[in-house]
View 1 (cartoon, rainbow, N blue to C red):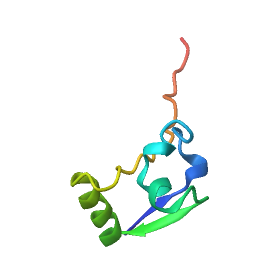
View 2: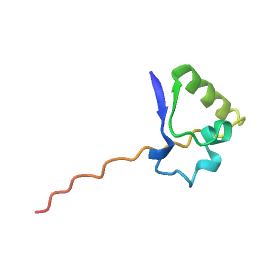
View 3: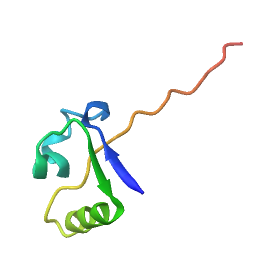
View 4: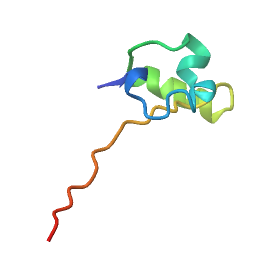
Amino acid sequence: MTTRIDCDTCVVRGLACHDCVVTVLLGPPPELTFEDDETAALEALAAGGLVPPLRMVHPVSAPVIESA
């Protein structure tokens, strides 16, 4: 399993880029893929305070509300 990070679709792009592990380590890529072991390593580094955590936020669909 992989984690796909597409900075173009992140809803907090610009707001949280300064404190995101992707931009801190690599700069703002258009799309990036991490394998499970790489994701675990980044999470361990963030938990130890060595790098900021991943701030990627995916957009969610709005609830469908039917009018009466």
